[in-house]
Image 1 (spheres, rainbow, N blue to C red):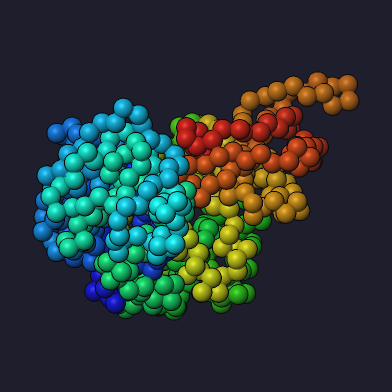
Image 2 (cartoon, rainbow, N blue to C red; image 1 turned 180 degrees about the vertical axis):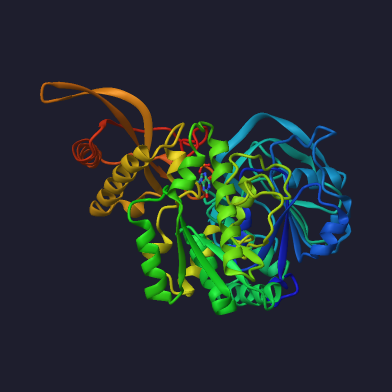
Length: 526
Ligand code: XMP
């Protein structure tokens, strides 16, 4: 895949485990340059094979003072390409090149104003005009307790703060740069500009990573992989599988067979909506499979969320395989897996990714799947998928729909899944979403849904005391779904939703509002 033109400019990030590493990858790609993440212990061979135009060493949670803390392979300093070390990445660069790092008495966390004392190609152009009291300053965001106390030979220091003597160190001749702050976070206003200087000016990368080029490249890649064979794609209705299907349709036309499995765990009216959209707007025929009973039967008595995910993943694949046999002559199964699914499932090459939940479309795949797996979006982030979706003709109302998990309502019904619970939850969810649209709040929320709590609480209807179920409302704001804040929806809005749910859905006695942020609470309840 790397032979295509779109990859001719490329940056490698060695991941030392910073929580901002994914953000860093996205920033570089937003500049228009392909960027890949490898674990900090990537070997010389892996790095040579990738053949980057520049290398960025990410931040990380360790202390570079400790002898057994992570180090990059020494080869990178002889590879003849520019290197930018960020926070821990700068410290590790200092230590590996003969400088020293020491622990500061105070941790520096949050905003800081740094004083620029020298010049470099790395500095954002605007810095040449930001002068206070004849001193150049820059606002940055820092989070560190160690700092470089002695720079390696042939480096110079060009920025500091009162607490940190070396905030930017450079060896302009070798194109080695270290910054103690985080240019990748938006709290560093000139951060993107600095990254652009590194990527475009110092590494001389060209902006080839555009939506059009990604589409062309993906189509070429799909054709090359598939040759004359045929592909089945499971449509979930989510952005990722929709974009995958359009790409595949462009690449191989009728040799794509789209299968839509109604597992009984979908939102209200979703199946009809998707099928209509596909046949009417895109002229793609869909094989519609009603499999509610099969999924719900398999989930009887199952309480544990990860087991639910695995069962659902397994049945999806079983059904696809059965359909493939019925259709005959199908060799491939396509999936809309994206880069963050891969990272969250702990099967990326970075050492620091932990298994949070086994997303069914990645972690739950059976080992002996008979179809070959095609995942054309596997290297893309959600924002990139949306951009190419827009180019392929999907409307923004579809592209910016809140995400819906593959295992569907099953992970929004705590414990055992029953048809009765699914129906109640579906109705409650439809009310919440309808009201969000009515109140013009849908787009201000990143994800909102209801959760079914299988506990009974008292309600009084007329003179009768009843014990009915509880619904929770979850609404969050996030940029990357890795962290999220619960959102403070207006009281009147919540009151309307709660009244409608309790009055319109029999057997719901109570509505509660989830005010937990992630971390530690995940967005889904299971
Ligand atoms: P969590 O609950 O992990 O959710 O904070 C983060 C984002 O991922 C979605 N999610 C899933 N998506 N299969 C999916 O396809 C899953 O098993 C799954 N679990 C969570 C969740 O809706 C949120 O957008």
